[in-house]
Length: 435
Ligand code: PMP
Image 1 (cartoon, rainbow, N blue to C red):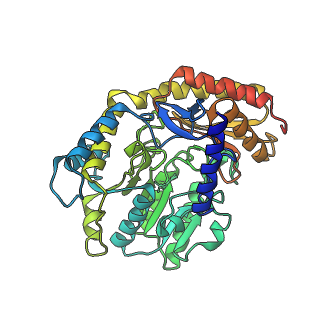
Image 2 (cartoon, rainbow, N blue to C red):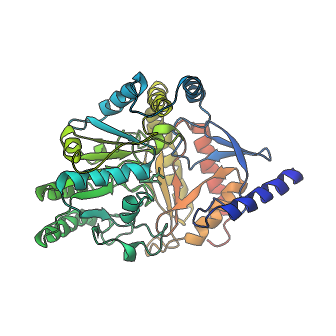
């Protein structure tokens, strides 16, 4: 084990030497993870960790069905989607079937950033309007357009002051710590509507309103009831389109809803998906109506060399089949519901827990120093993550104040593992020095 540690430290130094510093890694002294199985990660020192952060692998790590399907396809053919083969058609049909009408037309890409970028371009192309309204405290990606609409201070402290002039932002509709709390959160929607009306009156009606449909980046906070219905109606009244970022919250993770927009009772014009689709393989998609896709034809170009490749299409279809056959959305309801109850019970004993956000297996445990002032417990959250690592759990902070534990394990997690997580959290919270 001593040699392993030396080797791992050397590898980390080599990583730091060759990576741009903006590309951080988890933990100052991270375990070296070379294997995973279901919701477990194994270090080269032989420790097993419970993976609480991986919303990129809904089926769990090293799923044999994905492995076998990919290996078989790689032995046969991998090429671009201008060729004619069955898997891309079958996968695309399956994906479109999961969406309500009129969302029946699919673009296949390789990541969430690409999906959001294309979603914005489709909206601008179809409406002929270059302005976009997005929500503050959001992350949508790193490409030019998806970065432009990302104002999460967690990722870039200068985010709000460095937006291009076509980006407009509305207040984060956070009902826990925003300007309007609890029942008052109904006031966010009329404010966003007023902002859309103001932009329209100044000759800059937005071509798109873009948001997550459930606030993932802020720790899994539900949008206020009726929020998207009001804002979507306003943007459409002025000729714009509603773009939904389902990259984190879609694909069954919320448990009761396959898509976050269902929770709000709306149907967007453009839906951007990625992450869970590929169970770790690079895969993303934009789904819209025939009409929007047609209007883009003479406004922009689209072709992705690897989007919808035979291997990606096989991965996409296998993930959908396995989600269904293993009833993982149902598991998100059952295990997520149980875990939320356990975490809420912990809140009764640990003052540091302000609230438990979220639904299904997208939960956020928000830590505060004071339940009235809601002062964020940022340092305590960082310390808690370190202690959880010692106890065998990989969990990370999120939110602009980095005071929310993001809880989004593989959807195959079982009750025993959820209980282990809650028990270790109980122990780690009891031992915090700064609390
Ligand atoms: N949108 C949201 C809501 C995300 O959370 C992310 C990734 N964290 C992205 C878009 C970008 O996805 P990707 O990292 O696959 O480019």
